[in-house]
Image (tube, rainbow, N blue to C red; front, side):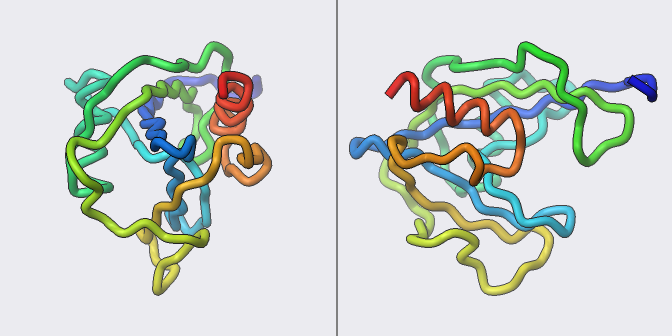
Length: 151
């Protein structure tokens, strides 16, 4: 490692699976980059992982989720992609919506009007058809493979 790592970046994600064995995927335009990932985001100081996921659900979906079971926490060194000298720790939980879905579900990737930072769309994908290469980040790619083993 050429640079000294001096901070942790902790991100928390929700694995939301419907009754058709489809998982919710987020297509986003952030940091001037197209990305396909699982819904979730960065943990803030003073916040626990479950509270983080609940806050992120309100921010991203505009509705609450129940956090069910822990699925995976990064167990190897992963440098951050967008922050210098950072180590990424990602935590994944199974979650479900409280009540009916109140936001738009798309049938195609990156279904937003304009590619501006903060643009986001959601879609369902059959777990059996997930392809890790379609996900932007290495830890999400690992999660796709773990999900395919489980389902």
